[in-house]
Amino acid sequence: MIENLSLLIAGLGLYFFGVAGLRQSLQQIPGRKFRDFIGKATAHPLLSALSGFFMGTLTQTSIGCTVILAGLISRGMATLYQALPMVAWTNLGLVTLVLLNELPLPTVAMGLVGVGGICLNFGLGGRFKGAISPIFSLGLILFSLKFMKEAMGLLAMEPGVMETLSLLPSSLHSLFALLLGILLRIPIQSSSAVALIGIILEDAKVFSPTQALMMLIGTAFGSGACIFLLTAHFKGLMRQITLFEAIINAAAGMVMLCLFAIEYFFHVPLLVHGLPKIDAHVDEQLAIAFLIQQSLCVVFGYLLLPRASAWLEQMAPTTIEQDISRPRFIHDEAVQDPETALTLTEQELNSIFSRTPSYLDEFRSEPPPNRGPAPIVLHNAAVSLFGEISSLLEAVSTNPRQSSSIRLLKIQRRVHLLMEAEDAIFRLVTALESLTDSTNHNPTVESLAHNIVESLDLLLHTSICALSSRKEDANTLLELTSNPGQVIENIRNQYLHNASHLGHTTRKIILSVTTQYERVVIYLNQLSRNLLATPL
Image (cartoon, rainbow, N blue to C red; front, side):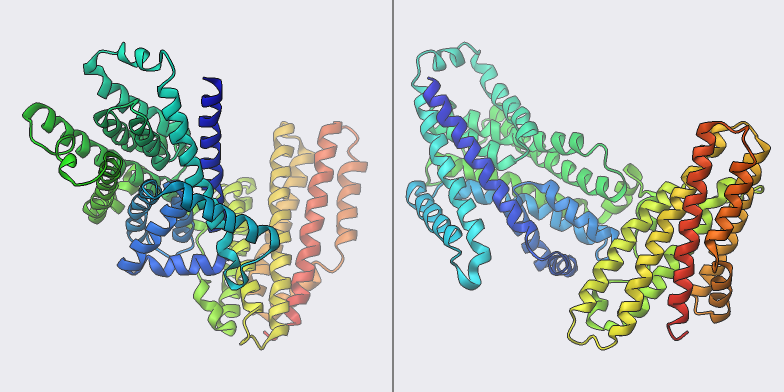
């Protein structure tokens, strides 16, 4: 009993290890090229379908696909309307492993594991080296199916196993299998894995074909519930895509369950008595049933598509952070024209830094009537956009058509300076919030906060004007930030040395405020020199 159970667990372990290997193979595809290909594929129906099927086959989970597509939408490379069909087609990709179960497993599995293992160990494969790891992972998956089939067959012959199952009333057998499919899908997170378990249980005579079919149907409801629960913390676009995936899976499961009910009550041969009419083994018939179920996901995906964007927006509205994290100027296609890419990068940098005065809205004596997003939201959006810009510039630097290397280096330096300045501004604002919270209308603290805010506001607006190719403002910024050390020392002398009545915590926060302000001034001073060194 224990030996057979160990064999089953080993088979499950090999299966999940193989699936993880296939997912890693997808992740190792060059990020920008892969993202660019998927982004373009969403605009073409046939490519969209093939790409979704391919990603579903490799990842064996639809959540991985939704993460990729949500990132493409947030970067403006695809619309929600374009991405949803690809999400639907990932479900059909899950059928691949179930169909592979019908191959002569020992021969194929040993061949793939053997060839893949030898090539990986000795670094063989040449130009096809990247395909060796997926081949090895696929061999492990097929080998695991062999283990699980053998283990299930041996467990079925153990005394007490079949007797225990027979204690259930016959009317509850199908319901038990349906619930088992739903419950197993949540922790296993792979519909194809649960479907294979159902087919293996039938092959071992633990389940009848009807019970195995009900377990397959349960994976649809379990998939919808799993996606809905596991992505409950998602917001905006990410939540919209996962909700769409959950809805089409639940709809497919409902149709399959209705077909089963019609057959049960009205004796119309649809599934239980309809599939046996196909000249195939029971395992193959169950695989066809799973194919029909996953195909229904695609059908419902297209049926719901025309109105999906509107009602998904109502169910999970796009967040402000997602909206402002979307690039306004840069795009991956700009890499093909380096000069255009650099110009768009400058405009994107100007757009990012033009939001920095909004960080100070909370500390103004007269806050604006329409206050912008919170500083943490603006900061997270800026970090995301700076990452996009850095990735774009890295791609531009490898473009053989790149000729203006000096301009590229200056813009890369500008990105670094603005990124550090924005980080210092955010940290300064956070320290100011702590400072005002730690005191109760202390005149000394209020005076410091007011002077810092007004001074920083002047520097930020001057920097924004300087970034807009205004040389006189760049010169003004250089003068305002020419001696940051002396300015900060005067502030510290005034508010620390002459304010001994302040507590230790308050004095510590004041030191943090002045340190971050000094960082801002230093980076803006270097920014002014960078701008003046560039033809304006």
